[in-house]
Image 1 (cartoon, rainbow over the protein chains, first blue to last red):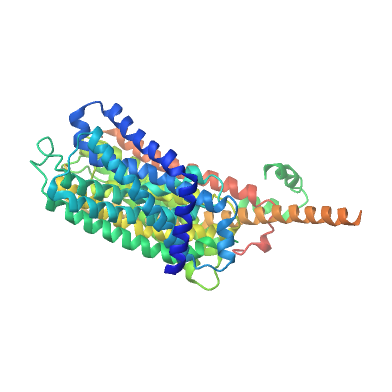
Image 2 (cartoon, rainbow over the protein chains, first blue to last red; image 1 turned 90 degrees about the vertical axis):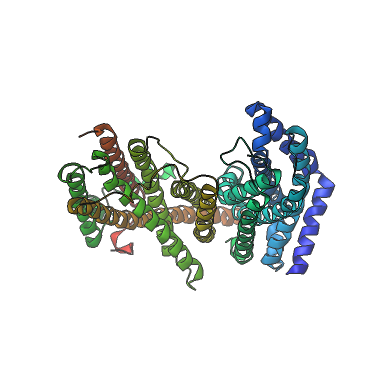
Length: 233
Length: 268
Length: 44
């Protein structure tokens, strides 16, 4: 299973490296959303305060695009069917594709974080750096697991481009909430203008726990469910 | 599909049993007729008790009358989604993979989405009267809204096409995932609210003192909507059977035509 | 009755929606059941 996962992940990342579709299209898209948020909100103090939420919104939107891409690669020339017929372990395919998706998301998030710092004048508290990294890693795992699972569910069907956001967005809501709160704790935003006087770093950790549960639950569900999903009649 | 309908209509006169069935309703049986009559009678009761017989509440006045509708719709919606999850599991885990479970899951989800939509509408109306706002970001409300969207997505997946078993497998997995997702959403929303503000509104049902007639009205509502639910799901499931059958028949004729074409071609 | 508008809307919308759904359901049943013979249906 892990062997398969590694090979599938390497294959996906290799395709990505050759086509540069993510670097040339998805990254600019994510950056553009940051700029558009700034246009819509129009005030510097507001963007600084809601920067964590905007960061995760931009990531979530990019996730949808990335998942579409990840499965368009598979279904356009029947590659998924070939893998299935060849008897490749579906759990391995699932983990591999999740891994590749997670890797792309991490790169995207690193650049988005830079964008948030530059555009929205956010600054991470030194003590919050660990929190930011762990939150990002766990949230990315959760997003990648859910994305791959629902992407596989809609793969190969007509109208999946419009269906995927409808399926995916409600499910990733806990990640959006949890990761945003954890980032707020690390950024120290909400302070003064918020409902409470300030946010302690320690306020972020319960959310990290929730993100871990989310990733574990959906990872396990995906490993179990991907097999039945792939066998099309 | 619609192109074949006139063709079939022409059989009306020939098929004598069709004429008699038309007035009985093709999807009804003795049991479902009984259930249907029960649902109608109880719904009339609900309207009478809810609007006329039951007294206004001390604190909420007449707006409490919305509760007799709102709470039963919410209950039925949750029941429906529970049945969807259970039926999905039955389809996926039973060796036979019987499509009847898939149809029950789909029928129940559809009825559930309707009732959940009504829950949101009636809840908004009630909220406007008792809280002064249509919507509050309370954990229960937010989870309800998420349930609604999730099962709208579920219904969309059921319409994706493919064979009946492909549909059943896909939606079965989704039905189980939804059951998994809901506690997570509820938990996260609850944590979110509790961390930065108390829900600004009082628990709507907590401080309502209910007298006997009010409790009875609510009880009538619950029973009425539950029987309505069972009637709807039973019939929706049967209609779905007919639709599947119709589709298969279409496919069969198309296949036969294609086969006749190809054999004709090879002979010539 | 106070707030009658809200309350009647609530009852009307709910019962109306259910009635509409039943109507659509029966129409679909009739449309899809035209070719079905009563003996073939699993519930008869």
